[in-house]
Length: 253
Image (cartoon, rainbow, N blue to C red; front, side):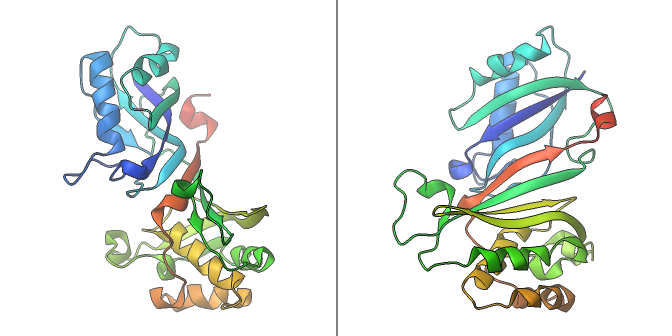
């Protein structure tokens, strides 16, 4: 049977989701728990890559396995074998052809910025602090320029294999910046992302918030297809995968 898991994780001490030789990954951690519960080590299909230090509120993955454990009982069983930094929120059976990555319609990321001269002692690991005041209205105005179907090469880190193939066009359906006290959140929903795309996008919005970039310049940044035109890549610790959306038919609904 094909099973979909919704998981959350604190990415601080992981090398990312994908299994890698240079550190402990979220995928390896999940597979260890699956092996402990099921007695087999199934191949896991994740909804996408997350880099070292990136977090997830709702990450989707699927695997194929035969088990007598009721699907709704799997989260409790798996969580007994997982570290505190990883939790399975829910499990459900999905059609055999379902794939966590290729069946996804959109993914939403949130980048968190703590805009204060004083760091928070409680959430420093989950945001990037900028002490200088930021104009969130200017940031939001710049964010609107990224909405639509565009070539996002200017927002792609060097060395991307996808960029090398010329596959750099993506559709952003929502992009906004909002403030709640000292916390500024940059929310992006798209059908796909390039390497470091959201962190570079957030860095570009920070430039607009500082007054160093005219929000009206965003179309020219995209048209230029040059990484040097966009803002800096913000640190991984402020980035969260917020949710993954699937068409009802992909889930068998």
